[in-house]
Length: 358
Image 1 (cartoon, rainbow, N blue to C red):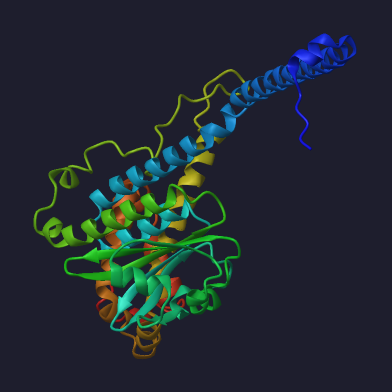
Image 2 (image 1 turned 180 degrees about the vertical axis):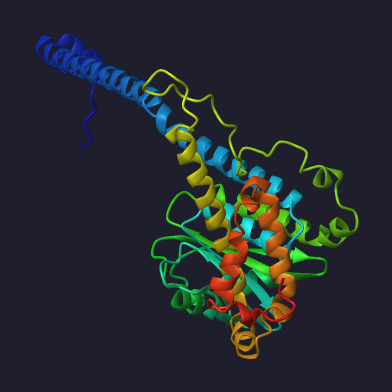
């Protein structure tokens, strides 16, 4: 039997009407509660969103700061590369610039079918990049960067990069990048870098740096044939702030007895001592580069006492760099470059440099 419900019967029955009204009222009250709860939750969410929108201002500037630092490093490298007339100097500035943005940097040069470490920063004491040799046939990101002639970026831990990780030490939880230097019609070198920090700007910076260095290397022959006039007038121009300079003497200080003392103040002596130490340091840096990459020639040169004949180009080039940087007032006082050549290249025996050494 089918039972039908007649609304008129409910209306005619006061008890049923009362029950239905109570249920409707309860539902209405519950709806009001839900609406109020939703309103309160929405207010809380708006408050949280507002507070989150205000607080992150400081962290939001971190990417901008990293980008500014990267741009500054690229601009500084451009200035250095523009004025260099030596391949080693360009590549050295490249490594130094990249080292300001990454934890470790290694420059590999392409030698036949291999990649050979040439210069590095951040590898740690005792590490020698020249001992690292990797075949171009290996699947490392270095070889793939050469093949693609493009920057390769990967996370540490990739099995393809195990040969590189064994050679340099595995950079756990780091970003690894390789940027090729395309000189004329081939990749002549690869700049490797890894970092545990934010690598968002590093890829673009390394791309720009490698390109600047490559252009600088290509321009070296033309720069030798057509030197810039500013280089010829450099001696007459005041040295830039990063060059060593001999400060002008200050006015003499009064002596204890009231008369002027003929002695210069201790501050001038300190400045002169600092300038001398900087000259010695620069001489050591230049000669150490010759020692670093000419071990076999130095051993033979010491044995046959013809070091200067074997390394004439390197020694003369480094001497010019020393004379360009060190002011005449210091070079006239002492020849720290010559002293360092005798000490480091000739092991203290000046006769090992040969008869042509002057």
